[in-house]
Length: 332
Image (cartoon, rainbow, N blue to C red):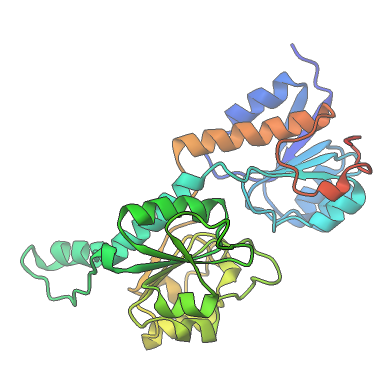
């Protein structure tokens, strides 16, 4: 039996079990502690004696980070790291890692599935057949031939670039807005655009930017008003990219035709939130990343990052390189 010489705290996970990551961690002599909940006091108390933290959707409170005086690495089950204080981790010498490319295909597929579902009116048509019969199609039909439409991608990172190939396969014109995108580094078949132009010309708009102070509320009242009244918005990135109140108003007034949300500012939304009852809203519970393959990859790669850092090896995906030279793990 392998001697357990380190401990890792798993704050939360949403899949059926943690067998894959536990096997990897235990084989490396790392004991796994699973938090029973994500309350601040719970995470703070459990973090006191751990060498690593693995976290998914739960916010990792500053109190837990400060209490984890032995912690060398905080490894995210996922891409974005907006739910941990990166600056504080760096200050305390904690290496932060993520898995930036594990679900690119799944999220791109999810976005296209929402576009197709909305454009082909699958949800209202299904409801109509079940409630009033096969021949009753008293619904306004505004389906478009996708090859005549424009897709606007806000944020041309890995997921945005993966989405381009799918959109182009349907013959869609693709506009992209990203401060780092140029004519020299754009994907084939993409037109570089500023955000106002993209919003005004796109039939479908999808968000793929990280959540940082500059992108919080990126889509607000003015941006929604700039979109076509027939346009459909998709957010499978981070909830706070969209101003919630402005979105509800735009949907009610018909400024935009609909929205698909895999993420919301607060997850889950309160049961009485207007978005939960609106017919022009498609909502999924933050599952765009999901497939059997992506989950296994996520679990395995996140665990391996912890093992690497505790073995004083450089992680594959270092989020805070400024920590090098002054980190608890001794990485240089």
